[in-house]
Amino acid sequence: MVPADARVLTGGEAASVAAANMVLLLPILSVVSLAEDAISGFRAMAAGRLISVGMFLAAMVGGISLVAFLLRDADVDARNTAFRALPLVLSLVTSAVGALGNAIFMGGPPRLLPWAMGAGVLAGPVNGVLHQELGQPTPLAVLGAAAVLGAAAGAVAPVLRIPSRSLVVPGIAGALLPGPDVYRSLLQYGLHVPGAGGYAVLAFVTTAAIGVGTVLGSHIGGAAQRCWAPASRAAPGG
Image (tube, rainbow, N blue to C red):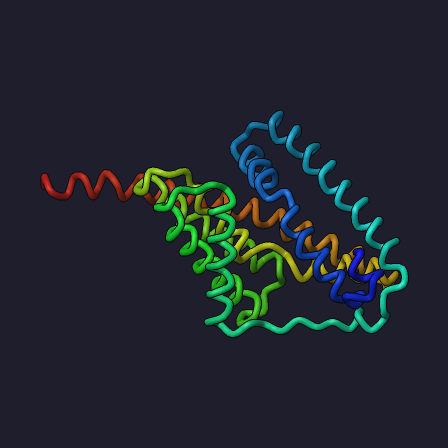
């Protein structure tokens, strides 16, 4: 927030920078593991992860409160920020770049990188079609896209001999993180505009939808792969 105080950035621009980094701090892996443990029946582990996620989100709220104090003199016009959907081609590029960057950051081997980019390219359009074309709310659109991503990863990962999360996490980072809602929540909280809490809740619900969708999709994709694999092995001998 130093650039905002130094007038290098406006209040809205400073909030954009902070929100972009807040999105990267969302506990995606913990939420995915929480959903997986809850669905698979590991209740004790799920409860432990729930406490961890709750503490993490509480820390984020504390950080947002600090940002609100730093943005107390931000320009009021920043509250009128509007988001426009990217053209399909450009959204594919940004999804691919985001997924690629996440795979590299995680230390993925070179052979993983094209598949990680493909995960982002898959999740992005599905999310866009559900949200923009079919008018689904953000959490439902993200849930559907995460399920498709999880199913594809669950089906392909055994063939590639890599964990399905190696594909799921880059795809999530490239296309499904609730950036606009985090931005609006942070900005409106900093400007003391009503409605910030609603955007924060929407961001957290969307993050939870990512976990549920990817786990359900992974189960579906893994089951489909197991059904397909014996048939493919038996075909030449038939």
